[in-house]
Amino acid sequence: MTAHAPRQAHVTSTDGTKIAVTITGQGRPLVVSPGALNAAQDWQVLADLLAPRFATYAIDRRGRGASGDNGEHTIQREADDIAAVLGLAGPDAILLGHSYGGLVTLAHALHQPPAAFILYEPPIPLGGPVGGDAIAPFEEAVQAGDLDRALTLGLRNFLRFPEEAIEEFRQTPFWAIRASMTPTWAREMRAMDSFGDDLARFAALDIPTLLVIGELSPRWLTDVSRRLHQALPDARLVEIPGEAHDAFLTGPHALADAIAAFAGGLPCLLKPLREQD
Image (cartoon, rainbow, N blue to C red; front, side, top):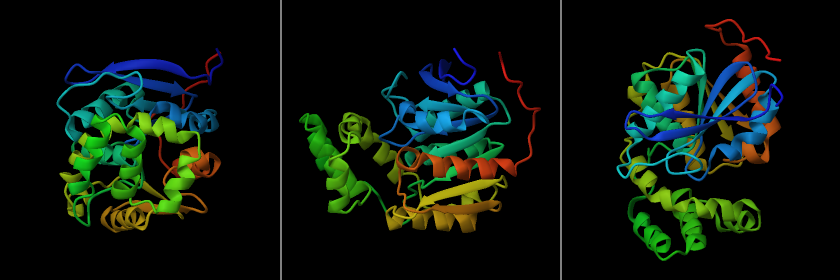
């Protein structure tokens, strides 16, 4: 095994749930909390690109991948999962949250701010509930085993993708993978709707923060990040040209460059790790 090869680890969260982590590379720790329809494996290409400079800790959030689950789901339980992974990664870790994973990291940061923060389009419900009445028909499709329809409804009503974007996505190899993850989406949508729209609570997060948006992302998502940019005291915002909500898959080099540029200006709490043989 080379120094940069992915390796598996597990941590135990506060409620006893086992959380799986894929660790890739050497250097400053980067803990990744993926979005609702993603798992650690979706971040592997990016982790490989970052491997010479960062040790990426990509989490399988509870209920997916190699992680366990618990019947009672809340954002706070997932925030506890983040805390457990950060305990493994160390105090110098940069915390990255994508989409719903960004809400989880924000919930964690309110109680225990990380050394630095990267937020990629967290869907804070500033314009009212994101799921709302659309959750019921989505759940009906999941319960009927029609995960293809569930994904279509979720993209249309939750993320507000235009129909042409949904059809383009349907033609990609990622469609079936995302459809298989839809059963946990409804509970996350309920948690998202109850997250609240008060951005003032984040004003005390005086930590270096990078807000990433895609040029082609849904407007409501980029608007949330622009509002956060105003609310957070030490935030900068970068837009990735030609990319949307999943640049870690479709434009990993551009996202890796943005992460490296941000991290290059950060102070380090610890001495750099030596390369292992």
